[in-house]
Image (cartoon, rainbow, N blue to C red; front, side, top):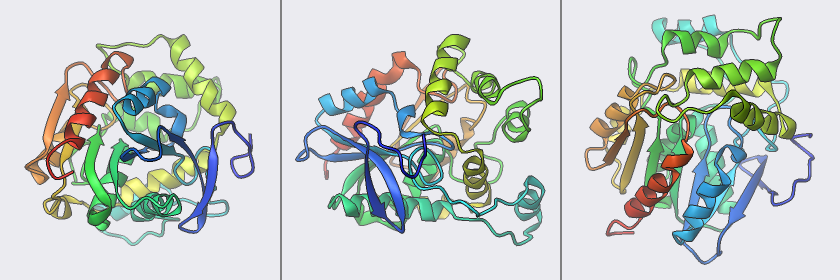
Length: 304
């Protein structure tokens, strides 16, 4: 399926912030809008349909979309990501490095989508890289945000919210010659899954296969990774966040360590921080009702 021209039932397209964005719109148009921002190399279908239904049942108009370079949203073709070595030089020695786009650009994509849909304010929910983008939406456009939910994410502070060595190595290693890309993705996801809520290889394989069939753009993953790696700390800016805020993190997250959630709470002191035992870096099906209830609760805080 071609990410720039494909037709997909239920998916719509708008031109926003200079790119073509694919999105889905759920619930009644008059309900309070809630936008879901997915993580790195995660398509909009990574948000489970049953989770969308729960949020709609809670009275939200739910908008989920493909970030730039992923899914059916426009690809940044011809723009090459810097090497891991160059990014490392930037992180530790301040060596200048050019990247195709930044997390700020992706935050502005979100605002552009809201503008295209004529939505003035929304509840903003992001997971992983999407949590970073959600933080930036709140920082850069505070008057557009009703509440912030940051799920299994971090602030960009050095030494906080990092991946385990094994997972970090797996995330940047080339696909071994004796594996397909799909098989490698299944292994990677299982490495940082939730120990208390395990999925079978067959379940993960079915999910990955669905995403690969819809769209597969490895170059986009590298460009998104560069945006995450090069992004500066948001700590000082997050300390000025005033909107009701929810932080969700698992204590067994091997991709974004729970210290990222702890750091976010330190920066946004009024935030509600909920830590789930045995949860890794995914959205366990059994926990979805709790996530939906928590989002409804934070959205109902006085002032919204």
